Length: 152
Image (cartoon, rainbow, N blue to C red; front, side, top):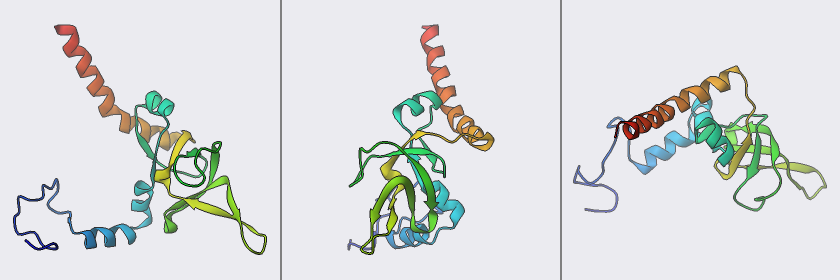
């Protein structure tokens, strides 16, 4: 077996045979993804308190969410509001995270959504619906476990 092509089909286990495992194809589809797909890919994890409250692990990030940077140069600073979600560049711009250019102008620094943690959600009707839909299976599982424990 050479490094590029695998001859044994049992080597890789796939969940969906219609989706490629090829690094080249995966990268191409990732970087040429449409905006609607980028929204889902650009999801950010929720803080422990929000995760407990809504029983949801992550959410697609949006403009008025409050986030805290967890990785990189700007990590650990106070929470800031998301001012822009720049899907074309795969980054979010956060309120007080900016740097000064050589000519003295300040520009926002892009941070990847996986490197931030959502501290406060901007909730509207659609966002609540998403939270309910995502939490439903988890709540059902919790209920099942309780029933099993009660009968024994």
